[in-house]
Image 1 (tube, rainbow, N blue to C red):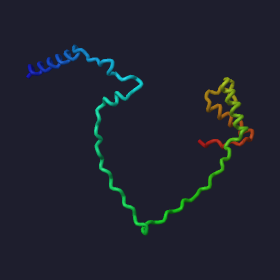
Image 2 (cartoon, rainbow, N blue to C red):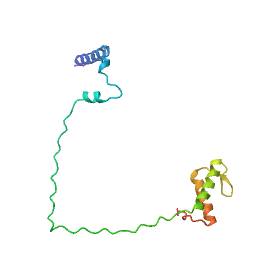
Image 3 (tube, rainbow, N blue to C red):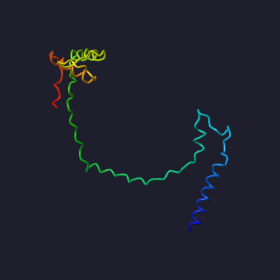
Image 4 (cartoon, rainbow, N blue to C red):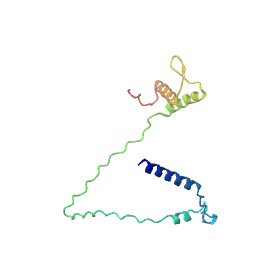
Length: 141
């Protein structure tokens, strides 16, 4: 038994060596397709027949007498697109963003430097609220 296994291993090893030693076949230049055209490559690929799927039976239409009348859809009045933030609130945020980009934006009594864009926007909106501009309420966390 052990002898048979050893023979199999040797045969496998010989096959691997033979594959590596065999010279690789190169295609002639004329057979290569140019980069611009992929037609030559597509033609070389074998064509496969698509398996036909069984089509489901078509539903028969009901006679007109048995059909129910279509319900009319309710039309919902469109809300007017009123501004959520006043233009002055936007200006306040813009000022705060400029300070943030310069690196001079500060927050709180301790005047710690602002670290993120979101924080700078929140500070701008907070200042706009204090001035009485039209800004939505803070979300309740």
